Length: 323
Ligand code: ADP
Ligand code: MG
Image (cartoon, rainbow, N blue to C red; front, side, top):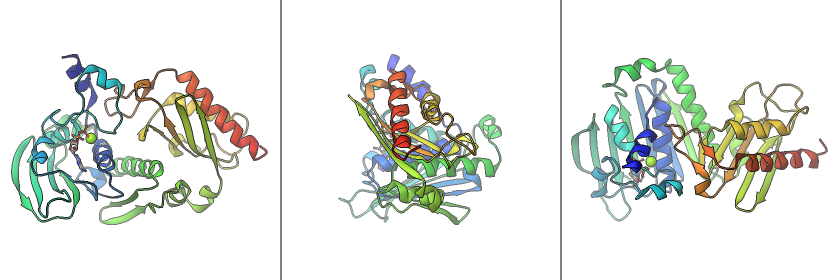
């Protein structure tokens, strides 16, 4: 029952951006290389994510909405060995519990797809439907039955901004996937899906930013750090443009940010923070992703070692350009 406790602590759909992150991570797990994200009213009114991934079979679609039915976790030991982005089978049931969720999904082996509508955990519709291979999930009436959470939301523009930032970060760490993002019917971002992070940096920020980046790379035993950091003449007044991923998942980590910033000490002239995309790879048993309910804040064992690796990689890259 311990596993259940830790799982229960895990999944909280806090705000629209949590829904977007869960849906897009599922699309990535499904092997999609095109992910279309469309939101209305800052994601408070509607969120739609369409992917060209593997889809879900008709038999499995209802299971995907049952808590833990699809969870790959079998014991407490497995909690320490989380390799895919999803692992608890909780996101879809949690979203369907607090909103109206419509899914259309098809696997390549079938020429028909399957459609379900679930609201507040109740199945309103289920029927075969014609649709392309992949998955479309539309979420509306978000928090209709949890007024406390609804009241907690910020303005449409703030919630929409949080979603845009999350989409940018996911696009930056997955350059091989094409992300298309629109708000209120207007496309506001598209990544090329070329596999080149510099191309994504140019599309998220601008070409000048992309041209001011330096590649970094460092590895020691089973820890690897790679990505891009900005030359010191490019700096920003917030940490917003620092993107960190651990094992392919966007995370927030104060200690990783600090290690990066430390390496620039005395070098940034205009503002306080660099622009960066840091991809960190670690053995799964060195991460506890369950620290923050929405899986954003990670805790790592042996953080000092990772910090040294990051600082060293950044300093080396800066030195090589004569800085
Ligand atoms: P988890 O990702 O932790 O397994 P979720 O509740 O997020 O749990 O998703 C439940 C299951 O539904 C997944 O394990 C996967 O099998 C399936 N699924 C969800 N979204 C997609 C998708 N976009 N494409 C294919 N399968 C999906
Ligand atoms: Mg998931």
